[in-house]
Image (tube, rainbow, N blue to C red; front, side, top):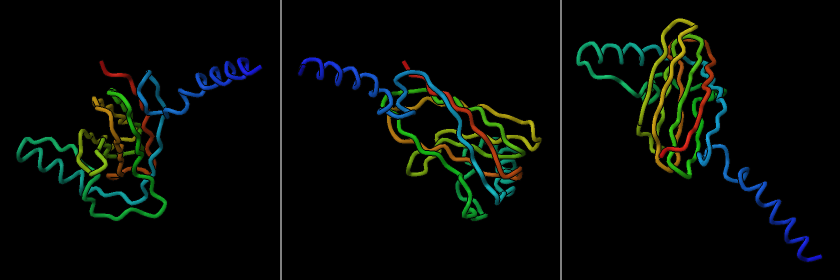
Length: 158
């Protein structure tokens, strides 16, 4: 009887183990989506990035940090996740107008970022290779509608 209970417990643990590692473990390819909400657009960030690029040729990767417009209480501007193994994060962002999206460290260093166009149909893709650790995907409204959706895919890095 004890052997049967032990075998059942071991089988249950094997079934539950993938669920305990969480959605961002990157031990196998998986995906999902995040929804971002920002009711306080800040078009100055996009204009400043374009001016910097035109004057220096330097590409801006951080659109969401140092915003001049404070967030509204109902805004959802970031989603945090943790990786237990190296992975490649691929984002496909479908906004309603101009939005900035970036992948940051918990301390605020931007690893990669991109801005969408002003048209409602301008979707963008971002791909970044990440080491094990904690990361934040941040999105901010640069002059579009209040909502954006980011579909993500995490694949193990080799």
